[in-house]
Amino acid sequence: MTYKAHDYQAFVTAYIEDHNIAAVLLACGLGKTIITLTAVHNLLFDSFQIRKVLIIAPLRVARDTWPAEIAKWDHLDILVASMAVGTTTERRDALRRKADLYIINRENVQWLIEESTLPFDYDMVIIDELSSFKNHRSKRFRALMSRRPMVKRIVGLTGTPASNGLIDLWAQFKLLDMGVRLGRFIGSYRDAYFKADKRSAQVIFSYKPAEGSEERIYRAIADITISMKAQDHIHMPDLIMAEYKVTLSEAERTAYEALRKDLVLDTPEQQVTAANAASLSGKLLQLANGAVYSDDGETVGLHERKLDALEDIIEAANGHSVLVAYWFKHDLARITSRLEKLKITFSCLDSSESIRTWNEGKLPVGLIHPASAGHGLNLQSGGNCLIWFGLTWSLELYQQTVARLWRQGQQSETVVVQHIITSGTIDERVMKVLSGKALTQDALIEAVKAEMDGGER
Image 1 (tube, one colour):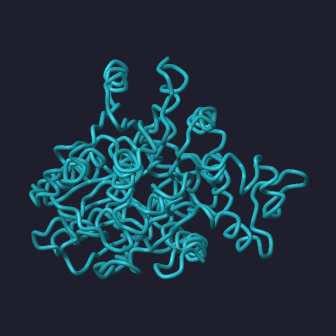
Image 2 (cartoon, helix red, strand yellow):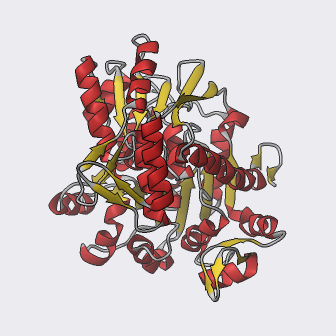
């Protein structure tokens, strides 16, 4: 297929070529993979500025998306890629093979650097989903940071750099510029831009931006950062967000309130306890979905309100394919059981074959977990309806999952995202929190958005 770049795509490709360090914050659907591959092609074969590239991506994106994009476009025929996923032996063989690009999943970054004994001689590194390196204590961050001085060029790709607030930016930019813009140490970054928020005596639990700090952070990173929203540059389908409310019975409401207030829920068979606030929120989300794990790991069913709603929505789709996002394992088990009872064909989108079947429009119901299928997968060919059976606190995973359908290449004029919400439960709070976090995210995007006629602002 012949690649005809949109103006913004050519602009970003040139930006990557012109910057040894580039933070590319592109909204889902803008084509960051082909944009980056085109830049790599030009750097390899036109300007001869690089010779060997390492691409780090989520597993399914490394395995499916990057190789598929390379095979799709005519001008990339010359690129030789080696996919280093699978067993240790398979990864070693792939990394020893002569190629231009080496693609590895992020979970094996530490293995590559600390255990493989292979030379780390890549002069360009591309991190797809830079936000997965936001934890400066993680093993993958420390391992890659140890090799960062050896890398001549580095590109960080993400659509959600600050899903949990601006505090997330430090590790990501430390990996890119080794601490030049936001400081070498997280403590210095906090002192410069944040103030204590929630605390107990001398223990600080969280930080919030100090007055005026957001603008200062944006200015500090502006020279290596380019950001674009899909709506600004391509025709995106209309996005319709809807809530399908379900209501608990009096008995179910009593059970929910017992857990919320007393951190304990007694059932005839099991006892479920929530030892702290974090586990309590998880228990409440489970309960809102209709089942909860007991202390010994058994699933205790409490209601089928969301399953009934899911059945109604699928029926209303009238044969059109729907994507269903679930969070807990018992959600998957109960959804699967209901679909089997209804004799509806479905599959978890966890393999190349299932993803292909979905995109061919041959799968009435596709099931995805946001943490494993939220990044990078192209699912827009298979349908235009996403149903959130259970919600996540993570804005990043939420936005990325929505973007599997609401992206460039979606044939429908409308993408519908249905949230099944249990009234009067933690579901309603999660929806509000996700919206609140999005404000910070949007502020970051707007602050460094590239204008086609004037550069960054």
